[in-house]
Amino acid sequence: MTWSTHTLARTLSILLAGMMGLPTGQALAFKIVEPAENIVLKSGKTVTARTDLGRDTGIVKVSYYWYTEYGDTLVEQEATLSSGVPSKDKLADEKYWQKDSASGGSIVAVPVLSSTEQDRPPFGGPLRVPMDGIGTMRLLAVGEITRGRLGTRSVFDEILVKVEPDAELTAIDFETEKPLSLGRAGQAATYGQVDSLGKIFELPVVGLFSDGVVRPIAHTTTGTTYQTSNEKVIKTLQEGLLQIVGNGRTTITVTNRGKQASLDVKVEVNEEPNETPSADAGPSRTVKGGSKVELNGLKSRDPEGEALFYAWSQVRGAKVPLLDLNMPRASFAAPQVSEKRLFRFKLRVTDKKGADSLPAYVDVWVEP
Image (cartoon, rainbow, N blue to C red; front, top):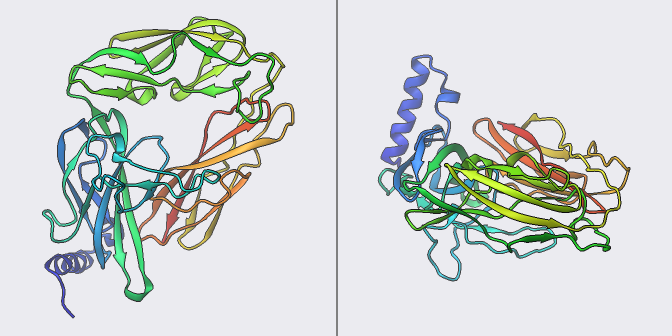
């Protein structure tokens, strides 16, 4: 049997830790060691990515992915798309397509960096921060382990970092019609297909920076705050979300880094009374790798007792195949892990008149 230098060094460190009585389990987990958790990075700059493989042997490749903090986790896949080369300037470096519009499945993400033991540093290397990145972002590292005829499995680690442009914000704009008209009066909504009372939405707000880059700043983690001139028409909610609460006119004012922009909004929706539903994604829990996990949204409620439309998605952890995304109960098979790892899921519910809930989150910790 031949051992690589890297594998030998890792094995010796495990033996040494055991002889010294160190807690080898936690200290030797597959882990992103560069960049550091919660560090502030500059958008567009290149940093060094490095992982400690811990006690996991057989890793042949580590792939790195950028995501916004609350963005859905896409399927990790090495295959490039029509261009053949992943973009280095697109947020999260994600070129993707959907093969199944009904389930939303088979979305492909291209890693920003794939590295093997031959690279320097091993399983790491130069990692470019997305040029249009801003606010809190997730860096996901996925290690692919070969098991011969048994195929492959993966291990992962994920950290949060703060991304700041090395440029000044010069102006704020809205990528929408101006003024914005919402609603089609007299038309009934079916599961959010038409603007209606209670509908929750996000404005496409962008910042124009002095380096010529346009960055998405709708989410509050980018430093954006919202004000409405008429809370009886549109109400401001958490995470930069807005909600239609009545007909009329209002002005939405957005502030970020000392700059402001305003958008006039006219709302004309069916005034049929409708209360907002609430989503309940169930309690957080810890499960064993290999077990079946059920996500239960049955405690979600509509005040009028109407049937609800369910939408589950994953927002933390390496991607797992999530079944029954549009049912009250979704499920997935917990992957085998070397160390305790976090998987976070989001649930939104909508009533048949088009009123939405705020997102609800549930954490599932998977342990060996």
